[in-house]
Structure formats: C-alpha cells, structure tokens
Length: 374
Image (cartoon, rainbow, N blue to C red; front, side, top):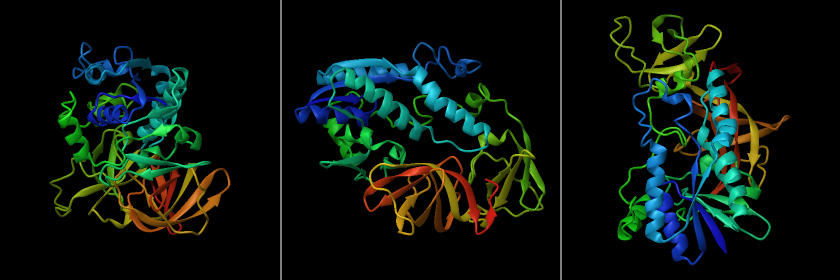
C-alpha cells in the first residue's frame, strides 16, 4: 500500500514519516511550496525577510535532510497559485470585512487534502498522510475523524471543513501520540528536526510582523478606540489588526478616568471605523448565548436539531455544551450558555464524544435578541 506524506520540515511530520516506514508502508514524502516571498508583496519594505534563506526554503532543506536520513524519496511540488486563489484571497477578504479568518482551516480543505491529494494520486498513492494530531477510524462505508490523544495539541478543529471523501484517503500517524512522545521518538532516531521548535504564524507564510505584512496588501484605516458608552480612550491602527477578546497591543493606559483593570477588544463598528473596548476579562459585552454560522460541512454524521453536542469556537478551547437548529442556506443556529469572545470568521466545530462531526463559519453573534457588534 503506497502512502505519500506531507513532509513540512517539522518534527511532527518527520516522526510521522518514520512511523510509516517502520510499519512497512511503501512511503514517499512530498514537500509543498505554497508561498513565494520573492514574487509576493510581503517582501516590499520588510527587512525581516532574507530571500537567500526564507523560512519556507529552510523548511525544505530540513525536510530533505530527514528524508535522506530515512532513505525516503522526497518530491517537491508548488501550489502557489492554488494557495493564493483559495486561501490567501479568502484571508484578505475576511480581514476587509472586519472578521477574523482562520487560514489553517481553509489550507487543510483546499491545499493539504485537495491539491495535495490530487497530485499524490498521480504518483500512485492509495493514501496521504499528515503530521496532524488527529485520528481517523476507517470503517467499511464511512470514515470518522477523531480527536488526537494529546488534548493540548489536538488539531481536529482545523480539519472541520474536509470532506468524507478526503478523509477516506487520510492517515494521521502521530494522532495516537502525545507531543512529548513524538519528541522522544525523534531524539531516539536522531532525526535532524528532533529539537526544532514548533512553527507558528500564518499557515505556510510563517512568522513575521503581522501589521507590516497586512499593510502590504490592505490599506490601514486608523480610527478611534471607544468605550461601550461612547468615550474615546485611544486610537487604533486599523480594525483588521484586532480580534474580539484581544488584550495585548491596545496601548491604553494612564487614563485617570478609569481604574487599572485590563482593557479588551469588545467589538467593531465598521460604519464609524471605531474599535469598541472595555475593561475586565469577563466584560458582559464579550459574552453571547447563540450565533449563526454558515458553510456547514459535516464529515460523517449530520448533527440533529436539539441534541446536545460539544463545541469549540476556537482552537484549544474546552468543549462547550451546545444545541443546534438547522437553517436554510446551509446555515445553523448554535445555542450555548454565555461563552466569551465568539468571533465572526472563526469556526464553530461540533463533537459527538471523540468524533469531530465537522463545523461551520461564524457569521453573527447574539446575546438574547441583541446582535453583538463583532
């Protein structure tokens, strides 16, 4: 059985490759190049980018060293156009609309489990594999996406928009392991990436100054930071740089009209270009009890109206008890008990025990009948 694994140059996919080979699969690796810093605008005026060894090229070099160590063929493929059309354009459009996008979800849907899968099939692959902390249970007529064993690293949230057909061809070799166990395997095998730190930042674009990066594509429109009762307490650089519930980077302080409690982003008034802020982590305006979400994607079983499920409104969040009601236009209304900072543009992902049913993209957020200015 032939498996082609997405080798990113990180420790998780490196260990996944080793495990597949140890298990006797006919395995090859494939490195995806999805962003071209030399031709995209993020290099303009950004001294942090070294075109000689940009982060993605360094990742390829690391992937090549691991593949050579394990004596596995490494293919290299460019999905730059596909990434721009299906992930980055979505990313920019969401920010233009004042929302907070999740490019990792769309990257899985359109690149890792679509473009990658199609190319792997031309190489004779029966399955593709990724270094995600998730599990899959393949049954005769259906496959189920399960949470990863390591709850602190579980990445099923980011897989909520993949299809049943994509999941049918997927393997997750490290899903039954904890991060600590993955590191231990890498060190025991003396893999080149054993001590490499985990990547952060935008999917495939990497770590960089976020404000500077966005300015290369979207013009910033500074405006006022305003309390919920209308008092101006500062200025913002552009609504796109802030997300609901954010604390860091607000620069509010030293105002004698207020106490020393921390400030948080509570909402956005797009018409007035105002950033709504308030004090206190548990500000009432940050709480909601239902939302409307669209672009529903159910991987295996379709959730039932009125039945209680677990739900995450953001990555690494603990499960919240919810019920749903299906709406026309592939939408759902999700009901819950006072959850903080439910954010348009992010995903609500439903779970039935260990099974990830799929998810939808949050559009509108309410407390009772009042729509939040999110």
